[in-house]
Length: 298
Image (cartoon, rainbow, N blue to C red; front, side, top):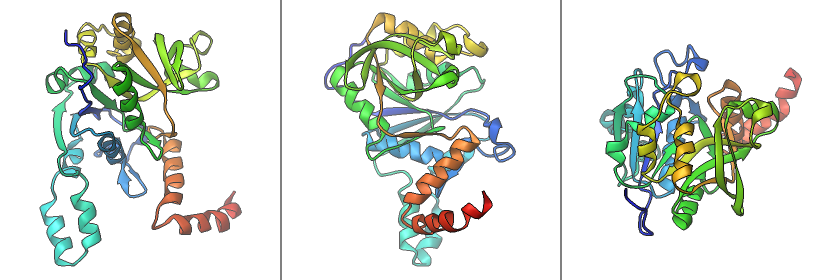
């Protein structure tokens, strides 16, 4: 077993993007939900940009059917770039060329069966190897001046322990989350002693729900390899975390930022409105529209 050293940096991120996206049919019949736009960028690009900000340079996408457009999005578009250059549209050319910053690589691996999030992460073991890595769910768009992954990598760099993103969830909604319990280690950091996948409201061990950001030591792969089907008959990442925390310290981090659940229609609409209000091109026009036109339709 490899032990994490002080010099070990988080250089790789896994993006599980093989889900069906059935809640957005018919929009997702032939297109991935991760390519749904928020203003002018797809969800998966927000996730990759968050990883890049955290110093991550190797992006690993776990894909499935109908996901080719994700690879196309992060590929070089020679014809598009040529046309933009010929037409003198330098600003748009720069946007197209910087979808993947220089020095960042993208690798794609198929998850041939929908066996759960735990399985999706497990199939990347040979690509991640013996180093710490992040797992980022593009459905969860977390908006903050300093990205959630960068915040978590800083926690990892200090403690050299796996870090799970959590937020406080009020009321019965907690039953839709993985839920942790533990002791406060420092400001916003908790030492986890238990984690449960989607408990009934009355059985939830706390109000701390797990959200779609993780930083793991490579030891998680040993626990993923021994998983048995859990909730929903799937291989649950939560179950692997439960056994990992019995072997080593695992932390929960209350990140700073606003989370939009873009796996739901309402969450995606909220993200478009609120990030649209901050957008340099349309922010003022959208604000004026909401102030002048929307009240008459409510």
